[in-house]
Image (cartoon, rainbow, N blue to C red; front, side, top):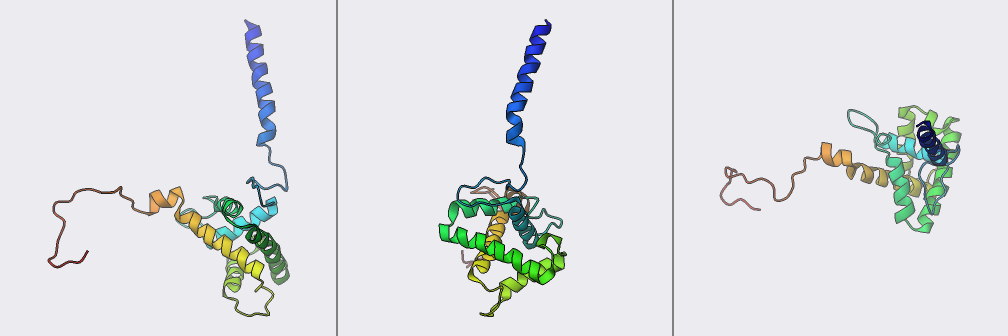
Length: 184
């Protein structure tokens, strides 16, 4: 009788020991597994903070709540050319350097107002000789912004809670108001 219990418990312990390394997240390694782009945990946090600045949490979930930074990385890895991926990684390094030089602290330690100022300065900068007008930095910010918005408007939350969606062809309404000479 006790032998079966011991064997069952032993099987559970061995199975748990086999699965445990797969659940452990090593420091410095990003959470999302990518094939073409190598991202560190610090870089993942930076993109997460930028996405949260673009779509902050209010009465609705923000970018971090919906894991939009992981969507950005997956889209970058799967849908962009090698040159765009290289520009993204280079721009990410330039962004971190610009923030460090301007505020003497990393982007994650900035206030919400400072984060917004930083992103707006990149978006609105037209000066050719400016340090924040590099092609890679603009590409980095452009990819993050477009894919964050794209991820938000195609997320399950947005499509089920924000957009009132009715399956085609919809309900029949026999008393729908009709005006003569109404164009389609």
